[in-house]
Image (tube, rainbow, N blue to C red; front, top):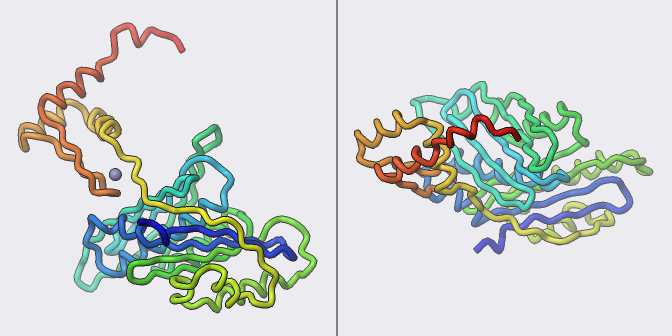
Length: 287
Ligand SMILES: [Zn+2]
């Protein structure tokens, strides 16, 4: 059950400042369930999932936001994706080396893919330490987004995040943004992970007027399907697929996000490429 997997929105009516708090339990565990990563990788994946959910919820769009960490170090690649309905999925690859660092000259990239018209947007910043929040803030500052601060915490079985964002508009109280950020920065990991949101907000901002809005469910959902995998195999080409069939008797593709395995035998493969052949006239039709 994903009862603990929620994203809550709040604001400070006296200031143009809004906030979000996310907590992930089952969603994170689902992403870890088919891998065997060491604790620092699990934690980084959890924090990346919390950060991606928070960032997605600040955007007014229909589509998908991807957060990717790649580059050097033992972490080969980490990819988290969240859609506008707060369906999250994430995966990481890890290659242990004696004396190796988890991250070396790694880079953080965020990619926005709107479903409707609108262009795909991607930005990249360096990620030198496993502390993800500063890198995300750096990215947001660099891409001229609204001033945004982020606090992330990973524990055993749960991961959580808090976000404050300064909205456009006149601030009657010029110091409010700095003050609220200072207060938020006092949050302890266990508070962020465990406290119910009303209590957390009271503990952090008890002298401020706060409105807490609706809670949204966040859940793990992988968009993989047999059809998409078939598309990937078609992309590989008949020769390559036949080679795998000859060696292994079947083609097995395992989704790296959810661990689901897709099998294609010789007959499936034949159908794959038979149906792929476009009718001869297709090339001449005009659209
Ligand atoms: Zn999948």
